[in-house]
Length: 347
Figure 1 (cartoon, helix red, strand yellow):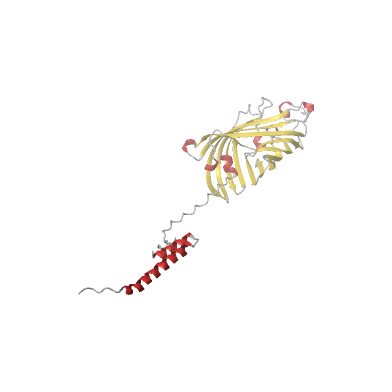
Figure 2: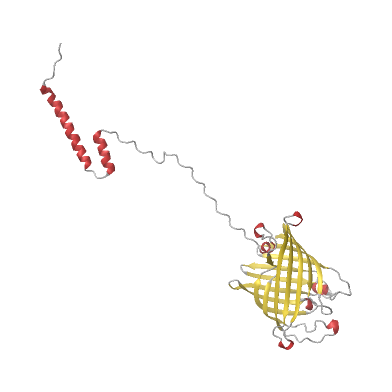
């Protein structure tokens, strides 16, 4: 049985639907072309063509996050070195190696120094000297340095060998009557073995022990000579800004016929004590000596003040009272006061 064909009139509704769909599609495409934004226009074309929209991008949280970078610890602050550490290179950060010139004792120049009792006859016992005619006002100059010769002596990192040298001059600069002489100059070379320590004593930290051999002389021949030789041990302590130095010594005996000041220990004693306090750029120091005798007790003390003036220029004030400001004055008592400038600090 032959298939029956739909009459032509039956295709008319279908054709109308297709035509209507085609007309709607054209209109939609034309409407998409009117959209200005690229993203919205592309989405419109996708809808008109029946294309599925693209999958949404993965949220940022879905992407595996990189592990956070660990915060870097702040750089450690530089170690603050104490005055004793800088002076004797007691910490690794303070070390500067061998054969570097360093200040030893204070370096200063006092253009004005007044004495209430100048020693006008220092050699009266030697040959009946007449008065020298000294002025009460003079100048004083001290230069002192040291050099580390060996670092780590005897195979021990805590032991260093130093050589020091100090010269102190007293100049009658304003005394034209006697031709403005240098009335006295003292020279003191030293060999010092420094042993770094670290212990506590009465709230202080013991930092070092110095074993020294010192020769001090005024460089003159007999009968004007003044000299002596000593061995000493110096103990260094510190607490905050305060440094304490205790130095007992032993005078090396000399032949009685060659000893030009056999009684020097009766005046200068057997040691000294030094206190040094630093407050910023200001330094206050006290040096004390005493012969520790009940009968004929003698001694001396020296006060000094180091303070800033301008830039690196520092002022210096020094007061002395007692015996032995210089070797020529070891048995002479006086009080002196001097004003000037400090070239470098020392201990």
